[in-house]
Length: 559
Image 1 (cartoon, one colour):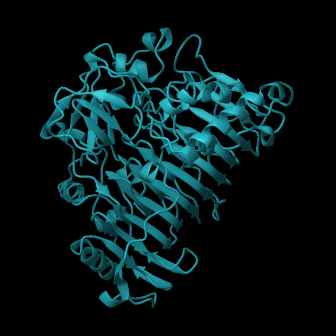
Image 2 (cartoon, one colour):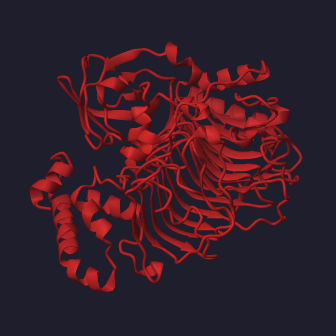
Image 3 (cartoon, rainbow, N blue to C red):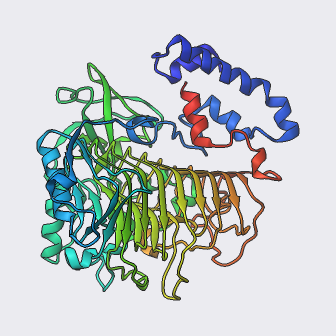
């Protein structure tokens, strides 16, 4: 790639330092070509990707995933409240949830700021809700501040049934004892649950007709950063908009998300009722520039925009932004793990309808479900840990969650043997969620749970896993994988191939640097017939793969 190519990749906004770094990286890639053929250190796929980073057919561009497009540091808001000044006492017996929530509300009224929790153990008999922009709940560190939770979400809010009927508890995949969600979404959730109704999920859910079309968007291609709109009068730099893309009666949008071609065209989509409930595809994105009717976005387009899919920018439920949780352990009173899909809601930290929010240095123990992303986008979970008696979903990512970064995460070995009627899913992604990254993880149990619902363009990289979990998902949720799934440098300690080596399952996917594995236990067949157009580059040991971490390499490519 020449200098002009690097300028084009960065829209011309390149400093001399950035340009020199980029030119060096390109030169390094070019000069290592011969050595790579001998030592197999630099995969062919990586060299291809550096030439077409936004449109590569197998590897997605995830170099801007996470809070503020992958910011290395989180903001340090001024301290506006200490929970002890609102009545919290670290004596292990006083219910401190009301005090903590009052401190959070005070920070919200102040326009944002940090709420501190000093060292010690604070009992909470209720859930903690953060519903105000730019409010951060900060403990003294995960080894020093503990919130000890004694009740579950069924006790605190009520039975949260499934929209698909039956006796399933939706606390099995939603809600947290620390719950970040905008006030409008929170109020609707609590009201609906108490009325035994299904509270809408996603960014607009079953209330889509309540949101206003801002402007239609003209046809564009996946990887474009700039789009043309019919009317830019209500768009401005910094505005968060929802790009909504509908499907047509032939399901060509879903076929496109699966890579297109004969296989997805022959797949029967009409009876996948759960999958179809996730459409339209809704992608929140911040605007960076407006020039006439041309609008530049914070990230490149995740899919093509075609007229038959009616692409448009719309309003949406007001997102929660700039909020975070830091430096604490949420320890739940130890109870037996519930049977599959009957979780009571001893859940950890959930981000719902959040954008540019974060969790840092947080541990959860003895939970039913650990960390959740529900219609959450552009968020970062960093230095998180799940431990204790074992859980259903240690990490779940669903309902159209996009562009999130989960890095430096640990899933500990369970301290209590699993009962036979439970499931362990590991790190989950489902429901048209796309361009999410799991980076630098230590999974001492679990699996890479693609939970159907056609998730696409997600990356798992630089992870060690004892692959002993099982994936889930109803048949009516559709395919396990869409296009551009990538597993890069995965160290599989028990050498089980299932959902690690995905070249035989995921269309237009990349499996690079995965330990030698064999098929046993849960064995799947591909959802699509014919050539999957998947790529496989394996090495004697994963330590020989360069770059070692695909996300970090894409971040470096930006420079």
